[in-house]
Length: 414
View (cartoon, helix red, strand yellow):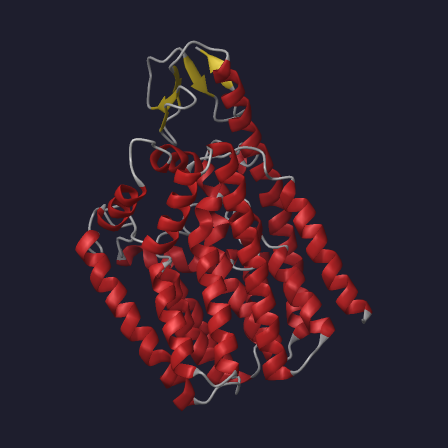
């Protein structure tokens, strides 16, 4: 075994150890899921029917059903850590499949594999998707895309397209597989006719998904998570490009983010690959329209509860950024992956620390509620919660005797 291979195993163990320290408390969408799907008055069949028919801001039935049935079958304190472990295992499974596809396409290279594994795991996207089970959607798509890439290496193009298409039922970001095929053609790793054979079933199943989805959540409607506002294209583009390789909008935008993105563009081999990468990022801008436009203000940079949704934003980078790293590795540009691992690691470190503080705030809140008369009403409009199990009601309650301080994250009396 080479030193690079041993180092790869070591960083995987280090990542697992670091992630284990994020098992502090269920938060936000996790807690809501535990309340909704843990209702003992509903049968498993009723839960499945509700998920398939209910017009939520999204419609991703397969992973939602998996999470719901797990929560329904297990005690809450078992379900949320288990589902986080499942997410972590899916990330590692995706990494293994990506390495297998690389070996089949470009031969074994332990140094290349080390940097790809390091850059993927020690990124903000991997930290938040592995540490928050509500991100089952993103990590499921990444796992399916990695599986599809392995199928392509075996010449099973239609089968790979089927897997890519099924990924739409896990999250709409599966659409990134189409510009990925273009990138692989541009770097000479896939023939046009083979890319078309993959794209046909991908598009067919993707259109089927959007057709079924529109029956539950009309595309672009007020109930849809995507409003497709054309005036948000430029802000989304600048936000995504600047933050692409640090995977966070926590700090104000800076020139370094644009410089690193420019480096990744130049690092692509030849103008065809660069043009394909621009198209790839353009597709991401459309898919994630309006989601990369709000930066954390510098004066609030220390306060995780002030603009708390930014804590979870890194999940959106997982699929597009990881697949970009894969393209670099496939094209034998391991040095580009090594350079890009630096801003990825910096972003991950910040997200890791903030997410720890975020969970501790909620853990302290839950502990406080144990000893108070029920229900405990707390004024905090950012994320309403009705949790009968803990006897907590959080929401826009100006008359509540308690409030959550957005600067400290502490529950304080008025």
